[in-house]
Length: 272
Image 1 (cartoon, one colour):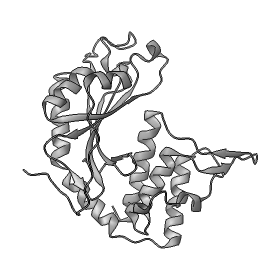
Image 2 (cartoon, one colour):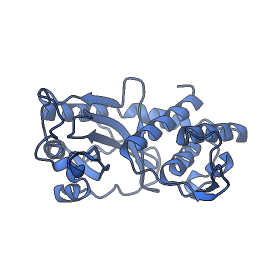
Image 3 (cartoon, one colour):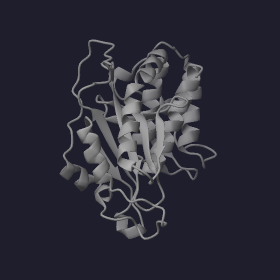
Image 4 (cartoon, helix red, strand yellow):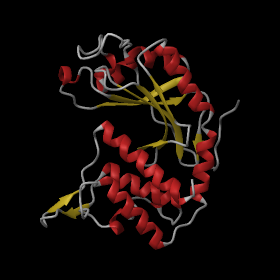
């Protein structure tokens, strides 16, 4: 089945692939030689390194690797997130590339999680997407873990066309200024759940950082909000009136929470 879906004449290069050595330098926890002592007797240890090698053999190239800080073992078993792009079957929709996102840890706190992702080369943003039963697969640390993870990645890749249909629908749905402000308010509530009043204004969240995001449709509004939420940088004021700047999100758990929440907010705008 041919999975090349290029809906415009716009061309751009995918991210450079990482070698195993580069993945290890960026996310050393993925190369743990054993599980943390806190794991139970039923926990089957498979180093993420073996998963990465198997995915590469199956036609997926690692393009990004990060890990979070952890108090367990000085971070040697910490949660890590790796992004992969298919080598042969390119998945593109205008200005985004389809990805497989793998999340795992070796401290017993996380099963292997595979998610459908999107990457925008124009701004280096990484998104996480779900559509009902598609786009999120958990693989427990039991059984033939390596084969199960590879099969899950291939399954997500085969169904990527469903994401392309949603992106097109978002591009074709125009929002009024009031609807965009409502979208921004909901995004701020998601970004600052413990604040009665967020430190920045909804209108600031709608400021476009690049010409490609100028427009009133759901897709471009969503991209602007997603970038501000994840990368930060907007000036604002604390509850005590002090000036501040939104911080970028580095923690993997928070990255996933915000990405998935923002995608859900965008889906609501197209009635999904």
